[in-house]
Amino acid sequence: MEAQPRPTAPADSPSLGSLPVEPLLTSEFDADPGAVYERLRRRYGPVAPVGLMGVPVWLVLGYTEVTEVLRNESQWRRDIRYWRARAEGRLPGDWPLLAGYEVRQTMFMDDEEHRAARRTHHSALSPFQDARTPQGWELRAAIARYTDELVGLLAAESGSSGFADLGAQYTRPLLLMVTTQLFGYPVELGDELVMDLWRMLDGGPDAGPATGRALAAFTRLAAHRRALPGDDLTSYMLLADPELSDEQLGRELFMNAVYLNDITGNMVLNTLLEVLRGNATVRRSLSAGQLGETVNRAALANPPVANMCFRFAARDVRLGEFWVRAGDVVSPSAAAAHRDLLAIGRSHLVDSAVSTRAHLGWGAGQHQCPSAARELGNLIVTSAVGRVFEHFTKVELTLPHDQLPWRSGPVVRGLRLLPVRYELAPGASAMARPTDPAQVAGGAEGQTKGLLAALRRLMFGGR
Ligand code: HEM
Image 1: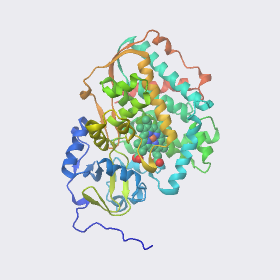
Image 2: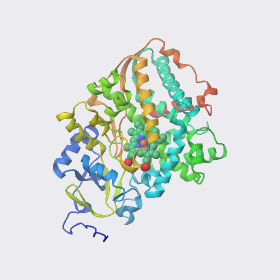
Image 3: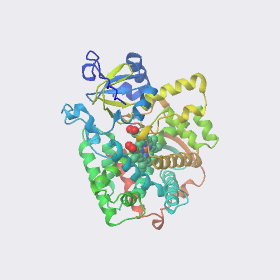
Image 4: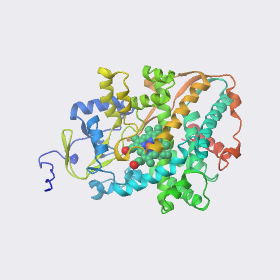
């Protein structure tokens, strides 16, 4: 069969560089991203040119167009070397987002290299998937223990009723404790690593050096576990692919740490928020004991990966009202695409499972969250959310939900704080007993204290 000629963009169609772009990350976007997506859509249709810290990017807003970009791997590439502006040296050298995109790991690979990297993640995570394996059982027991300890600590510090920030005092330390356990951190990788991870996650001018230090720490962890294998994800990654260098394994761990800490943490907080602010369908699924469905509904309302990582056009292609040129960068927006689903839901599919399953909270296509990682994410979110409603007899927001402070970055939308007034069930303070080090690989007790101390400094005194 004769190959069809590839279409090329008509010479008179506007290019990304020629269009005026409005900056995406404004205070309006911080407060109400939905209003910004709506305005962009009215003005440009399902694909809009926007500025990300001074660099023009196509933001994909329509559900149909977003799923096309996520699913069509041969047209939409992940390897950053496809990015024409980068190849031509047109990106500012100090562009804050470049540090993360230059970390070459699974997310930024294509084709067979990508598939092999995913197999490694899958195989390394699978021992933790099943509650019947010792690793799966221990992880579940550890999550339950950590949530109990954190609630117990709250009771010991602030009493059985009072005020708390479920971000700083519950979700974030919980995720760091899980990371410590799952990755098999030795005790010496402590407070400084935590500080750097947070600096890197918050972005800004020091994102570059913080990324470098965090990568170095994960590379050291890789070397440590190569020498001293344990029952942890790092060791299982090496077992799945003994060819991995310490540097490459460090990069993979770094990316997993971002998902585990920032994205999973945001999913916990977003789910708690949807319940607390009275989202009726979320509450209904929670009270019916359908925690998985609760999480789905919260992901639909507010996906933690709001705008997914960049894709690059392999060839000129028409998308929405524009011609996207080969080498152009696009960011598929799950948050904007979900507005299409919610609009359908409002019209005739209210409460139907169709709209919740179609959410893009886990991504879609070849780069979607690997099933083993998804299960781990779901396990952590449902355990963390479930334990709150088990331990607290009363928990309510202390701020109107539209006044809560959000971190709205180019990728993530997550709560900075989740301030609540609470009442604990009787006996909660008894849960603050120290962890039995024999039960936790690597003696996580000292680590936990170190992490908590680091977080407190960071949240309350470090900035
Ligand atoms: C509730 C928690 C989580 C959510 C909402 C989530 C969401 C996502 C999304 C949306 C993507 C696709 C991003 C894109 O295409 O640009 C993704 C990819 C990925 N996630 Fe998750 N994730 C979660 C938890 C985790 C955990 C716990 C891990 C591992 C420990 C993990 C590991 C990964 C990996 C390795 C990829 C890259 C896959 C690839 O590029 O082929 N995720 N995740």
